[in-house]
Amino acid sequence: MNYFDLPKIDLHCHLDGSVRPQTVIDLAKQQNITLPSYDVDEINALMVAPETCPNLPEYLSRFDLPVSVMQTAESLERISFELFEDAAKENVKYLEVRFAPQLHIQNGLTYEQIIASAVKGMKKAEALYDIKGNYILSMVKFLPSDTIPQVIDAGVGLLNQGVVAFDLAGSELDGFSHDYATFAQDAKDKGYRVTIHAGEQGCGQNVYEAISILGAERIGHGVAIKDHEKAYNLVKEEDVALETCPSSNVQTKAIPELAQHPIKAFYKDGVPVTINTDNRTVSNTTMTDEVRKVMEQFELNEEDYYQIYKMSVKHSFASDDVKQALMQFAK
Ligand SMILES: [Zn+2]
Image (tube, rainbow, N blue to C red; front, side, top):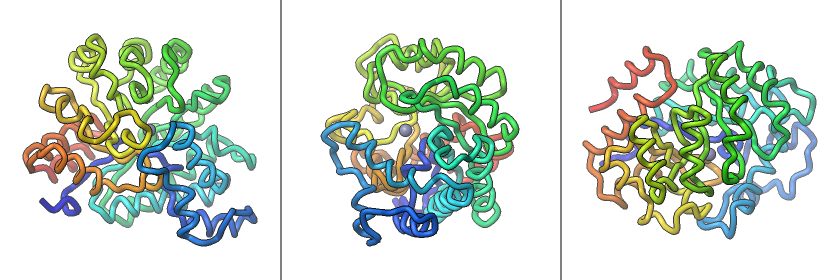
């Protein structure tokens, strides 16, 4: 199978984890930001996490450098454009990118400006390439939650015009959903779809609560449900799609090695699964690589691939028109 040529969909990709190293250098120079090096290989080495990280903070430290240059409207627009361009060039037909506006206010940008800049870069790429996309606004759990309503309100003007969903990201404590119920409800009331990072570092109970308390329609990762019957059954009953990110799961030790990833068992048992990158730069990957890894490791065939592709279309937050167009690529 030619994995590069396959039409692909990525529903779980972080903007700040997918920045081109050369772009970090260019933007740092423009903005007079001092970097530890201006050599693209050295910057790349600082942005890519090891294949297995000693711990999650080690993985998350890889985001500091890109975020430092993502504090202007121009840089956000450029990085957004380039991410969609990179994905389009490997036949990703639809891409949902998530990012945390709360991380981009260091130079005084408003949340509206931050969101509009990212969407503008995406629209530019959509006009040039055969790719469609949407943005998911991630709220970071390690930051004070009192700014969440402002972020939600700032995205409302672009809802269904580039912005589609609400997400919670950042380290995963047991029972976190209880602290975010009112925020998720506020987002839903205003028209946002909901996907939540859960069951990655944390327990299956977190997935159960993300669905039952926060109303998650999709779950970022969710691998922990393999050991939690109640969560597993709820995912199946409610037809909640898992956004699995195989390379990232190995890097962060969410699973010990790829061979032990539950994606095939989930798929064979009728759990909706999707294949995604998480972070193209930090995880040193592409959609082509992620698809190849899953297909080869688990000996899946083309028919399996298109089943998973169709699940990605069905569970995407795309408009009906875009979904219809994406289905045209499926065999
Ligand atoms: Zn993620």
